[in-house]
Length: 272
View (cartoon, rainbow, N blue to C red):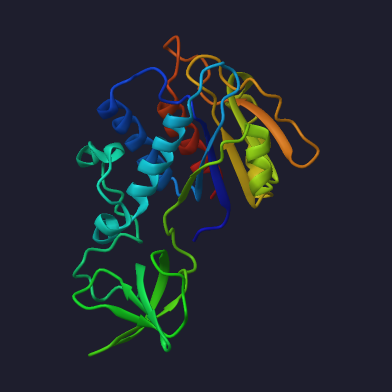
């Protein structure tokens, strides 16, 4: 059962070590898989102010590919028209999360769908089956919603509803704000900064477990490839802790995607 809201914060400089779109796509794919495996609810890309360089283009790319990965395969061509950012979408690993049923899985009670058109009685929705479903509510057109199938016969009737108690994918966005201002958007009660200059995880394991068990909205923050997190993100608005999740690392540096996997694996143990 999904108990807490967990958000991953990544800098828009995450991809600054490479100019190759295929390699960038591969690195983002690892983030998408890690996010889903460890059931994070959000990935928020923030503006890295440790450098004078502008990483806005990469920030938008990261958010776009992560959104693409979270979208069920049966909706992708309609939600994401042909675009250069997705040139290497074929190498992205599938998530196979519960919100990604196959097109012919008619037994699935909940599905995500794209609203296509409305009439006076409601909204027609593409939920990835052979015929359109109908929702008896006036919904915004050309937007993805989660639906519960309440009637499956000659006519498929759905109602907007997110299933309770199961992992239903993640949201991804580029805030274009500093890390501290990005954190304020979600109002966390616990902020974890990952850094090799923090307390080593083995020395504060029990304390961290207690903090996680007593928190409902957790933000896990990662720094850029060259300087880590340069901002002071301590605040009276949340509890704040700096942790070295990979003590005595065997390599000179740890890549962001490696840090995300290592950190989320530890937090996954502590969250249960």
